[in-house]
Length: 627
Image 1 (cartoon, one colour):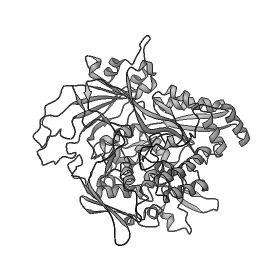
Image 2 (tube, helix red, strand yellow; image 1 turned 90 degrees about the vertical axis):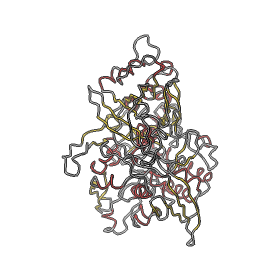
Image 3 (tube, helix red, strand yellow; image 1 turned 60 degrees about the vertical axis):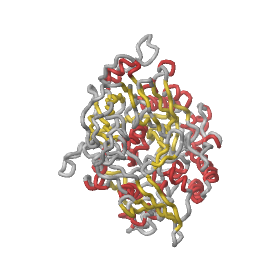
Image 4 (cartoon, one colour; image 1 turned 180 degrees about the horizontal axis):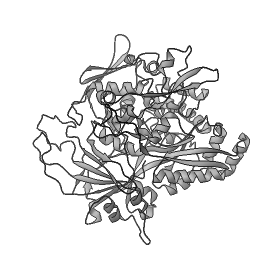
């Protein structure tokens, strides 16, 4: 997650070691960092389910555009672009890429974006970010399997020339903003596909008409093993993962992020190695379970014991002015004991997805009652530096193209911050469901466990029997093969359960994939879900229905119609009006239950300067300097 991600940074002696071309001997600073939660899956396709990954990914990958902390869209890998209407009536956006390189010195090419975008749009690949690309020519037909992936309106005209094709005139400013999505970063095809097998897991299911089909229930771990091992991870952002080891119950783990010496820098040129990325390393220490359990305030202490934190990360700073504390455990420490904390808003909400096929949870009234019983104000007292959710669309999302008015400020709140247990019990009685048993799945972390235990206590007060299932990062046990012998094969059990739909209720950190509400709301509509379909059955079964529901199993015809209207509406303000109508339905039927929105909380001193943040709330170390 996490708010359980505490960074402790201090100044170490600057090393003077030659670090590559450019004639510079300034290696830059090494910044020790303390994390209490590990991150192991660096696949951008799954980053929006975990806010810990959302904070790290901007350090590792860079897309075509980015949005700074003030909400301004900046060119990232775009050097220049043109947008023109073609003779056939289509519209062409042609992008010339900046010169940039992967951390192994190979240049970032237009084909890297073509592959990454086609991967999202592959019919047999699940991604809720797919709807962001539906403006591209043939996008919806491609995702449904009706057309070939090569019919998608994206291509490379040259190594540094990327082209997007649209059937209709689009809002170019909104499109540039969409391209800043954390899901729309480049990937090297040979790393993702050549080094690892692409094994899709199918399961036979029979519908009410007795028709048996192969349903995609997940991906074999080897299909994304490339993103779990530093030996094979290739990144194009300012940093790359040099190494990592997992924490055990008694021993801390470690991950080293190291400067990408080729980030925007010609590997054969003479530019200083520090021109684009100032720090040399970010040394991340994951605390063991035993250390974390001792991480509490002592009697009479008035703020977080920074010296204890520094000791955890094996640092020996002389005074507090040499340290900076970021995030995480601060979320479990009351504001009056955390010291001088700075906060930045994040576009990340902690939400619960309901499996609407579960008999106990199948009725909208039951799910709405379960939500109504939660006191979000009380939750935000347990998990500090959070604010109660007002709906599924986060605060910080824009209403229209002027980007001066927020969506949330423009409409009434759809969720009450306080609880109403009496009304919740009344709704359950009306629905004829006053008891039942189900499992609540969450990450095995201190914050998510604290949330789950509170929710469990409330729901059991209503009469339900709730079992908490904690999911972590586990070794797969898959036997090594010639193809995978150099990989550490791990499975992110929560992502695995989410992709397969293996849950009754599951906790996610939902990070907005777009700065507009469409990206959040569209995936709940049939035809926009981005869920994988089986191309095996597509060619075998007559009238094969590709409009599969959201991963929660929820479908609503009125909602689907509103999303279709919103997609067709090109005026962003009018589109938001339609989307709010859809969101109202979503929050009434509650297949997803928003709880609270995160803030990134940290302590800082004058020892470190030139830290920056992006619009999603991630802290950027690219130009960080220290005394």
